[in-house]
Length: 477
Ligand code: SF4
Image (tube, rainbow, N blue to C red; front, top):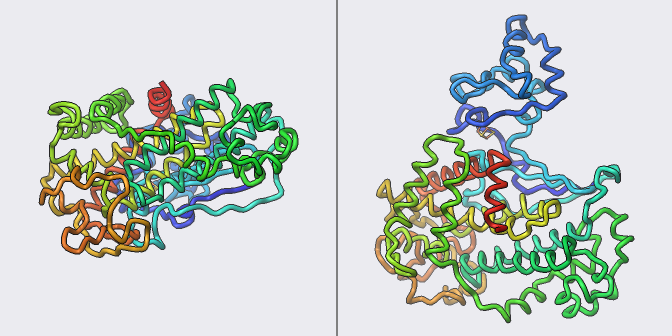
């Protein structure tokens, strides 16, 4: 078995009573079969508590009962009575693991921690590189393997392609020569290309044509003739179980060089205000976890969309700041990159099961856009905009573009220079770019608001399969 673990996985520690949210409130906690058995047999430290356990389980729905949307075991101090009385071993799998998350593929397990947990969101926004939320992942292998019959229909080739594409997306995310906005467009473009290839192959990127280098991913093979020599036969690959590293031909195929070739023929089209408005409406269709979520949506709506004058003409302060964050080197850049990485790392390869490559990439990109819209709207409401993102420490770093501080794809005249958005902009006198080398610091106030916007959005979007399904269906069209 091959294990992949995001670098923040082991650093996570629950802050329990200090947590502004609770993982035991609002959503239904499903109990696994083994734990149900355990609770049936449990005597606990007292007969009274054993009776409480039995009374607090919904034996038909296989979940804990709730009172006022709070788990029956959630005490006033924010701690779990079940754990307090019976120890950690008494927790069901959901409580034991959350916010840890596992994605399963044939002979591969990918582990991450969910930003719907406030502590994880906080880790993601932390400034120092050595405690950044998501800066990559580690991998290791064991001898164990999944039984073949569990993964009869698993498309090893598609999974390999997705792993390579994900790696390429990570490269795009960190390409600071271009703006965050352009990087997002490139990710959507890449996903669109892969989706078209997959659809053209009736559901499998890894078809018969791939072996000859003429059918599947034709541009890849045409551009990488040496890769064809290294190709394994399809049968050989399916035996090994589907990891990108085991497929050198695919690995060389989905490359930066290949993608740059595609980009040469691609005219960058940024999302219009009208498109942004239309896509935002999908959030109203989701089932809310918290009653006040619609208030937040309304806050964003009135800040960004209610008074939109015309295409490209919506010049509210919120739009200016939004543009600054997506096109400038701001102190928000590292957090935005890590968020993109988080959503891509966690969900992108899941397209191996439903073929919805574009939807997975779009979910990641739009989630980051919406989180920043929420953040800006909240700051605007609290009149905290001018210094919410003040940079305390800056370092220009040695990235491409650092010499001049200029993006290669941003029209300087299009970037607003209002004093009110100075906190989101490069320092006018020094030309130093906040966050350029990941060392720009956000003010404590901005950080706290951003963390809150991240975990609140994530909880609303990710708390049910129905919501995730609705979002993906919307993007897939
Ligand atoms: S949401 Fe995260 S930090 Fe809060 S109680 Fe749950 S696991 Fe702990």
